[in-house]
Amino acid sequence: MNSSLLKKIILIWIAIVFFGSMMWRLASTNGNQTREFEPSYSEFIAEVDAGDVKEVTLYFSTNSYELQGEYARPANGKFHLAVPKEVVPGLLGQLREKNVAVKVKEIRSGNWALILLNASLLILVVGFCLLLIWLIRANRRRGAVAAPTALQYEQGSGTIASIGGGETADRWRD
Image 1: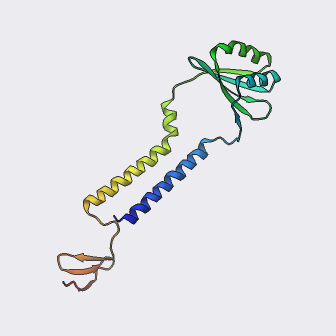
Image 2: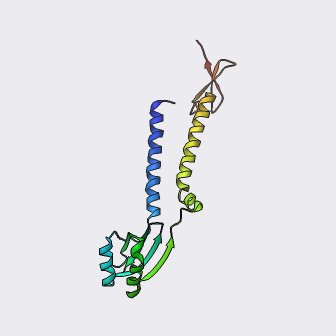
């Protein structure tokens, strides 16, 4: 295989990987274009006191809670922040006073089926690359030519025959 063909194949694969990653990012973002805020704890408490928080989900771990939620104003505004475990009882009281919907969830390490589903595009691209590499190496081991030539030399008779018609051309001479 000559170097220009190899360069073309590499460029094609780079383009495939680039467009695949762009499609992955496009498919993984949700349709709603929402802006996500990262307020400080004091800013978040001010928003709660003002009644601007619509709902909160608390994800707990060993040392802290991660709060994710949605603002009532601005509409579809989302936020997330981390708070220490010690402030959560007082925070829940404030959220209850302002009639904020509260959900509590445990952080899970990861569901293998979900991870494989999300990584399936990457797995397919890598598998296709490995198949292509295997085919190229197998082709080289056999000594095969990448594309058939227009004329074929018949070793037994010493004539050049056309691949399509099989008619004998002039005798091949030294």
